[in-house]
Structure formats: C-alpha cells, structure tokens
Image 1 (spheres, helix red, strand yellow):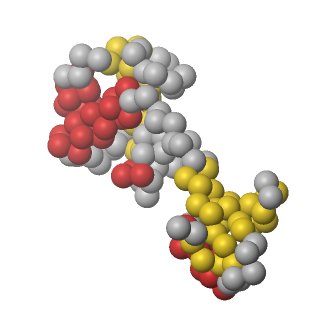
Image 2: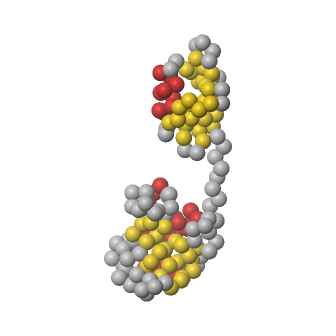
Image 3: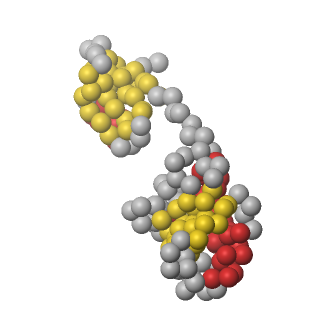
Length: 154
C-alpha cells in the first residue's frame, strides 16, 4: 500500500488538480476546468492512506464504485492511482456527445408499421407516435418485433 505522501505525490503530478485542505487533516483535489458541476476528483485523502476518487458512471470502474460514483483508493498501486486520476480528468474534460436517435421502421405482412427508436439508453417501439413497448437492449426489442411478425423495412 502506498503511503499518504506517495499518494499525494502521484495526485499532485497532475497539474490540472488544485489541492484544498479540509477537516481532520484530509485533502480534496479539484479539477477546476471540469465541464460538469462535479469538480472534486480525489475526495477525503487521509493521512492513514484512505481516500476516494470520483469516477461517476465510467464503465471501467462500475464494479468498484459505490452508489455515489466513488472508488476507494486505499490499496491502489502507483500505476492504478495514476490511471484512475487520468481517466477521471479525461472524463470531466470531455463534452458529452449528444446521441442522435436511431430510428428504424418495421413492417408486418399486413402492412402495419412500427418504429424502433433508440433514445436515452432505451429501445422504444412506437405505433403512430404512441409508445407501445420499451426495452433495455436492441436484441430484446428486435426479438419482440419478430415474434409479433414484423420485419425491418428496407
């Protein structure tokens, strides 16, 4: 396990971060250039070696993160700590890409049409503008459409 001073050295090697001392000899490190409201990258780094890094919804760290998007770095190696801090700075620096909705038209043999639309992490099926069904994956939505006798229109 890295010492408090070693962790400080690694974190402070990122010039983008600003050190702010808080209560009980703990330290936060802020990324003031964050494109989001969240600016704290490292929270509550304590002299006992405990501390947290905010990872938000970065998929890479979802198994380690708690429900607030924080990862405990107590037992992190030098490489792992550098990597997670770099990943979070990149994450907070990137503009969120607005996903254009994906819209597909599906038709039955009888000529009825449904639209399959991907928007905000959901695959929704619409009939004449009205939501009929919603699925978490495209595969589930397509399976439903095929079971109902619909085929992707060309």
